[in-house]
Length: 130
Image (cartoon, rainbow, N blue to C red; front, side, top):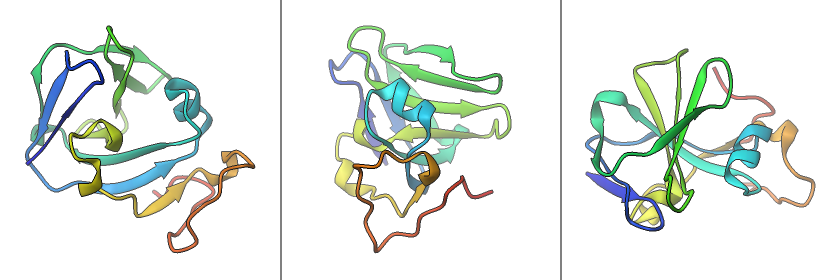
């Protein structure tokens, strides 16, 4: 089991499965919605994820995607898309122990900021893998 939440502690969640698709995303939307140069995510089946305290605020970041964040501290928490409604992406850094889930690749590197250096040991993809 993995557990995590927002910075202020109002929002908490639990994940009851192994993460998949552990990645660093360099897309413009991830950068702009997080205020960070890239966002580290992992994916789980929607049925293995549950909010255990509080209620995040969501907003549509595109015609097919919703992102959630804490309404009090603003911490970015999840990403969901209607293209894969059975899955949910969770920010690795919102985990209580983010060391337990390491990114395995970098995606959307065509949007990467020029001053960000990638780890040469990880595969990178100009666009998201399908």
